[in-house]
Amino acid sequence: VNALRWQQKRNFVATLLLSQGVPMLLAGDELSHTQQGNNNTYCQDNELAWLHWELLTEDEQDFYAFVRAVVQIHHTQPVFQRRKFFQSRPIRGAGILDISWFEPSGEEMTEEAWNTGFARCLGVRWAGDLIGETDERGEPIVGDTVLLLMNAHHEPIPFTLPAHKAGQQWERLLDTAEPQGAPALWREGQPYALQGRSMAVLRIRELPAEA
Image (cartoon, rainbow, N blue to C red; front, side, top):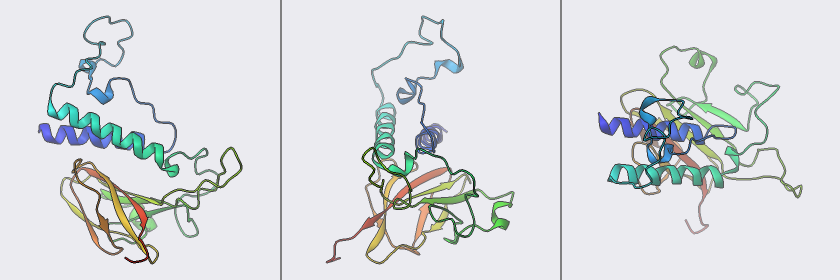
């Protein structure tokens, strides 16, 4: 039960920090500060509101490191820092290239799949070379293409990774079910073992010519 609670906390933090828009993290969330369930402690000058900066347990230290890792991904990946949301057009379907949605089979989601009430697993890919924005110098903003895999089901689901260009592979950046997991590479069409109630983040990595 406790292990699942820590994993769900990682899921919530990753969902918040990797969503479009400005993430708003309450001070102390990274320290597992709960306020004992009180969501409004502005006038509480006691242990409900005080932050305990000492990370006493290994679980607390690991969670703090995880939050830092997710913040780093948000900070270094331009696809999570869009200045404009997907507006004035559908964000799914044919002809949409900067964002794509996938079923566990690795195929793009159909309208039927969107309307399936029991769907618990999907993936979303943001194209890092199609952000369509410029920086303060007028240069195009370009970053990595990133894939988020989400499984709300309680059982593992093998997720077939979508296609990529020649000379590329998918590299894992993060997995909420395996927070200590080292970076690893997968080819298109390979199944990723997406655990129950978990989220994984992968990016396209260019391989050296000799590879």
